[in-house]
Length: 102
Image 1: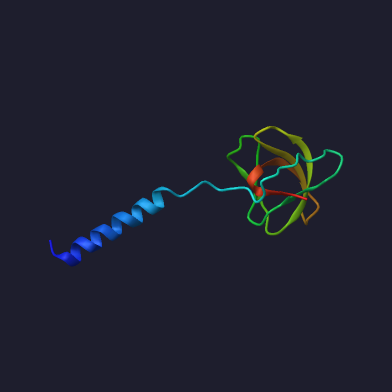
Image 2: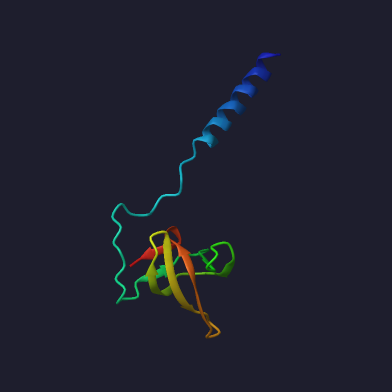
């Protein structure tokens, strides 16, 4: 193997190692405040997905920062109600990482 090919192999190995140590998605803040059930202070982030009870079926995908009505904090995610622009109320589950607490 030539010196140029060796350098290319080392570069590829280095790139693979960098991608293998990619960290998990992090929350925006270090302090997490549990939402108050009396106030509707949850907002869906762009691209957030609303899932059915089976947690696999996507019911709705949010296009921008929309207010959600919190029903229950399940410990894994939030059970919420959302009124679509057409006026239909949908109930489902949204991941903690897909929500901003205001």
